[in-house]
Length: 391
Image 1 (cartoon, rainbow, N blue to C red):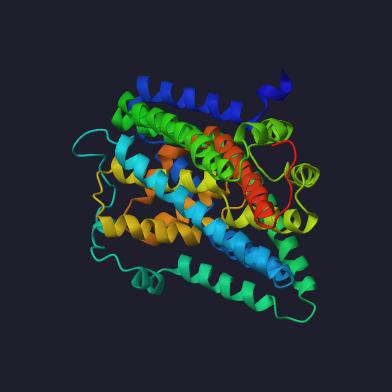
Image 2: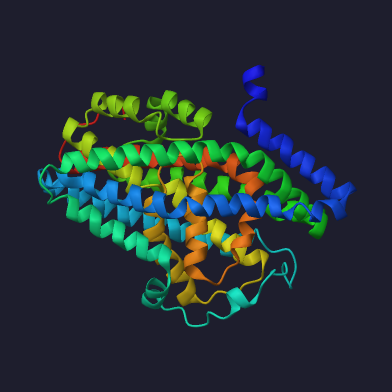
């Protein structure tokens, strides 16, 4: 019982309820709590540069082994890009169809409209030239590829890995402030906009879970069916790993046992050793769905109209920024902040509305991520002519 009461998800839930009550019964006080959520978002934004830079450069540098298994590496990267881009597009399409963020025709009022309405021409190259976030991202990509040609590159990769570990450890402690931020964000939202604010948040959660379920059972299911394999048998085979992911809200702790099971299923050690770790940086299907839906959700909250070219650009930007969304709790929020800052059209202040429910969507993201990487490994193994058992 004590473990449940002290779990971060439980504390966030208590904070949400408290925030709602304050918003209902003391709206004047609740509105004054806005700086709490803003401060938390500012702290999170401070992690954007190091996390995006370190995870992307480390992920690419660690792919040096692709030279030894070029065919497997090429097939893996091609598969990752096709499926992750598809998941991004699905998130955008479903969000536009269901419209979870629509409150009324006017939408919520931006606190500083001039910061977001001035960008009228949506040119990806112009955005990169003007935005520090994407410049950092491109620098990480260049460094990652360059490290593959460094002598004693393992030494540099090890140093990057240690530095990344320290940054994520710091982020882990910052996330303990999430209940306080959720309290402030929810209280402000209810106090200023009323209980109707809860309706779009509930719709977003329902839409997110439904979309990820459909993605797993239809999209990934059809991919496996093409190779005469069953998604249901795969899920049954990795059920213990799925429970670990559900309990920790992260796909990282389950990676060692997942790799072991995939090898026992018939996937060769070279395929598993390449596809699974690389997929944790480049094939995050659940995170991709979440990111694209969350961006559209916030745009709908503020009634920001997006053209077809802007929607395509959102997907292109997310194709870059999502590569920094490692399977660690809180990193998805980092990428969202980075993406909104890169676009300069959708208010980043809208992240405050996601504070309360982000923790409860992280389980769905992480589970979808690990299923997606399991499917990717099996598919690449089948492409290599390997025999898969139990599926």
